[in-house]
Image (cartoon, helix red, strand yellow):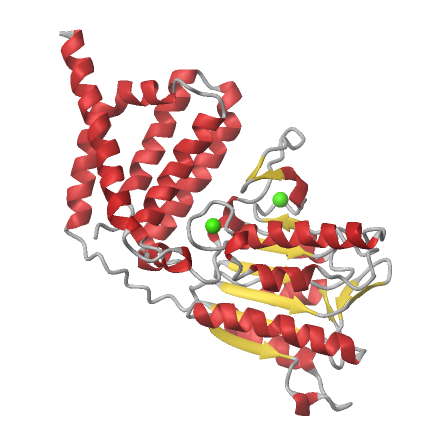
Length: 392
Ligand SMILES: [Ca+2]
Ligand SMILES: [Ca+2]
């Protein structure tokens, strides 16, 4: 009898695998790169999850999943049938917004660079169907009476009053630090980290702040909160030299080479990692001392994770006890979404994001858990995740 059940379990697992393979075969006929079919992307995503586990040296994973898969297979079928009855087209009514703030350039060479970087952001955001609002680039606003601070604060007051849809806030320019207060240089009065924190306080939208200026480090702890992704070009206010990271980041947004997990889209985390590597290479090639060190915070603890903590898209270094590394949320933020991501219903995307967070927590707890518990929880998460992508 035991042999019979083992046989049935194996057949169930093979059915799951065949199902994924069939999807892949169908997906292979479609276009590649950023517009590849959602089925292939979904399959790759699933492959990625399994792949990580297998590469961690857990050869017994497949066998363990097989042990519990028969019951899950029934659940999988049931959920699949439920989902098939839902419309496959995502009803994405959420309005995402990019607020691009270009600071006072000072020298003409910086004006040109900042304008180019801003153009790349606008291009990527427009391609991602985002609403784009720009402060600081209008030529007729370059008079002594220009006050971009008031414009920006009014604009942010409007944007933070909206209830939903991602809000991306990107600063391109120079910064200063006087030992107490970090500021972003605008035409007219400058913007302090505290001013920005105050106006963003009531924001309930998923928020991304990318601060590409020199001396931007103090903006990270000032703005950090749950549900936010904060990137700063420097790790402290004392890195005051012109920061190059912003240029590399703007170029990485639409660069397929930045797509580390090969899911056909470049996440903010992936762009951050590529830009950080290229910034590092610039200083090394020039034989200069590196005067900028980027940080990323996306778990609301006010502590930034440096790029060298990552292998692929996962932070692999263990932080001090009681603290956790960042990166999961930043990998879910995608300026120009691939087809698969676009077709996800907002509720399904929100659930997928939660499950990925759970997966990350589970992996961090792995050393404390019994093997069976770990794999049983892992299977539960992966199985539900597989049901969230629409069938074609
Ligand atoms: Ca990717
Ligand atoms: Ca953090």
